[in-house]
Length: 330
Image (cartoon, rainbow, N blue to C red; front, top):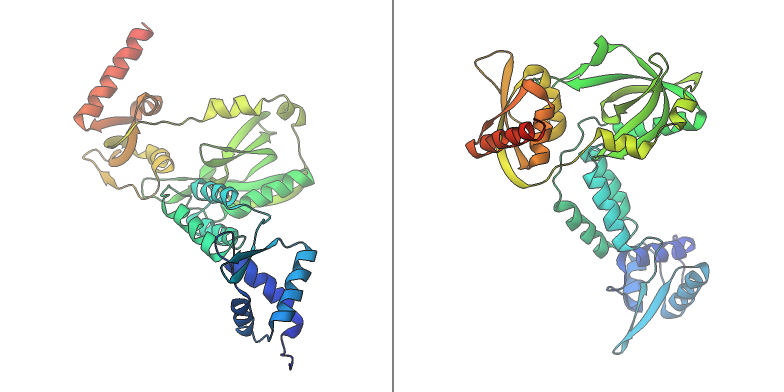
């Protein structure tokens, strides 16, 4: 049999075909394998296929031969990554608010390449059941890598920090001034990434939302604050900063002062509808939340600049919760 131009790559193509097209529930017969190789311009016969399959097995690829009636089906059994584990990774990527929607899809596509085509469909179904608010800052994916590099190199970093305004625009804090801190750790809490860093000027540990950091650069200055950071209990630190809330989904109308727009956008996403009120210093928005004591506590914690104005039953719940708290601390 004359050899084709791709014959030297035969084993590589065979390995790729088996990894992409087979799994525990989907096998290929010898004729199907020969046909698949032919699509890549590679000629093969039964005898050479048996030899090639044995060679791949000797190399470490777990190829299972299963007799079904008169046909023998070949498929890849054990893989470096199990489907169940990849589903968890897909969920983590999709749930993480610090990864943009675009970057999430790119990462999930790469995870799909670790399983067969049919198994990859299950990962896609996994993605479609999610619908969470994602970061609007595309550079966060690279910010995390840059921070890790700075920690490894024992160097400080410089960056600019922003917040959202009532017009959903990025506004640099401190009029665009540069922050310079010593990065010590990254915390993933409440679906966000936070940098824990030492501020030498203030002499304390501070935290920063990674998706709100812009133009991160690594400096030549060594990190400071090792003793201060070492004295921190990171688990207790993170719990004191962030929380979650549950309950039944309800559309709640909220009035707030303009400078609180960023707080609400951070919590509910940039797609919330913001409308002006008769008072130019206030705005109105409607958000879907799971009303509970934790949610009401979050509203109360924002102070007099944020208030619930509807629906009536939620306003009444807020009044009752406020009365309960007043009685509890009377």
